[in-house]
Image (cartoon, rainbow, N blue to C red; front, side):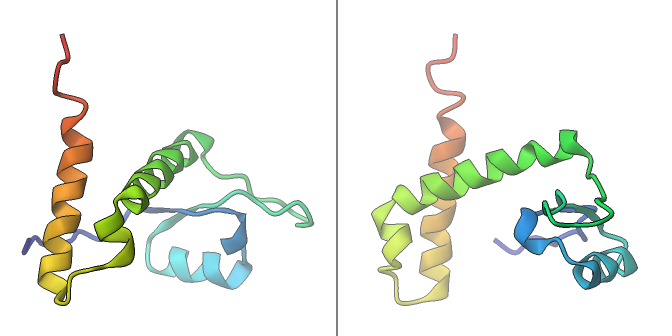
Length: 102
């Protein structure tokens, strides 16, 4: 799918990415870091927790895609065919919300 990719407004990440240099790089590129602070941080910077809840959706989507054997083991030899099956799996996940909804 040849689609233009817009620049992200925010980056949702877990505590493993909580570093000063990483945050500075994101802010220099005008990307808002939405990263919870580690427990040992002296001056914690708390994120927008409403945005951080969306991270759960992304994690569940990757969990669903990993359950698809063809996607997880990457049977396809070319990148184009792999991307095509990835799109089919994502469409299958998306269609679940519209089928038999009354």
